[in-house]
Image (cartoon, rainbow, N blue to C red; front, side, top):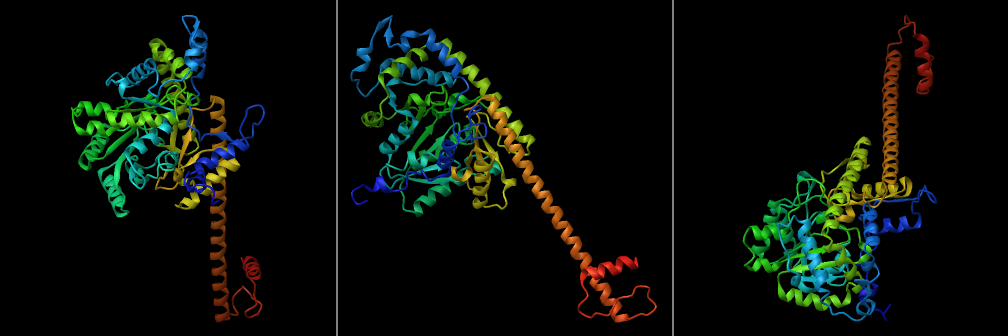
Length: 494
């Protein structure tokens, strides 16, 4: 062990979180409709598989993009050779156009402010390296994506201080909660460098209202710190209210010529909106030229391949395709979410109202044996090992209320979703039956105890009175008369 670094041997990666443990159990026994119908259904993975059937036909219709050709002529050598860290200008233009499109073209983005990274994971970590030093802190509203414990902390040494949000207002961010988190960081002698939010929220599946964004901007302006807005689910908003980007709010308040303009940064990716997590395409958008410069240098550790940039440039520049794709994606997401919510409601389980994302924030507090995180983990283990469904417990998202779970719905077929709902229904019914049987048993015990007491009292009365005229006759066996004998005697007298 002494030959390895502390980072190699420490356990701060977060791999022991129930969020990752659920994945491991799924991999051991994955559900398959044909080969393993009794396996674990994966509902702990926020992956969008609902529109892959729309992407493949586009590839077939555009063989040059897939075959690394331009006008029918191979450009393999051009793409195979070294490219600089800035990325293809054409791809960056296509990407910012797409970012504007899914935000209703209410804001525009400058491709020169974009830094390409190998996914949003790399983008968030790179921003931590750019904005904070080891031992500094970022404030994050809870519940938050469990992977942030790895992405933001593991290699950077940056601390996360939670902004505790509650179900009392739908887990919305409030000024008292932010201020409490800031004070908590100060008590720990941590220098707060910024706030990081996910909008739309992972795991809530909700979009932030303008007043929440105003609050956050006012706070970072007052404290002179940064704001990172992770907007990788921006294109998954399938119903009202519509998505509002932090960049739209900044421009609406004419802050584009102020210092706060350079302290707000956006993280984006094509993993969720286009369903391409395997392509590893992420991006940082910043108005601070120093941050952009530093992030480009760091991006050398996680570049997007030339082949991927070339292919996706062609796809994103096809405006007709992207418009049709996003429209259909929204319809399918909305239907799948509606099916999950209505199915769970029939099982007596409610979800937080949501309008975006690939998951629902599900309330199972009434299924807990007690209002504790130990009870939450016990319920989660039953769902994983007995119900055979992997979901993410709220404690892995740092929720302060036991009994909430993140349940994903976009990474499976409709038939698989129906099966998962049926399994959960059966599980809840079994809990209800056990609870009813337990209540009936308690009632019977209570009645038996009351009956026993009344009969003992009756015997004591007859013993004291020794009334020879009574028609009820007890054998004189002081202190030895059993309850069964008392009952038999009373029944006979009746």
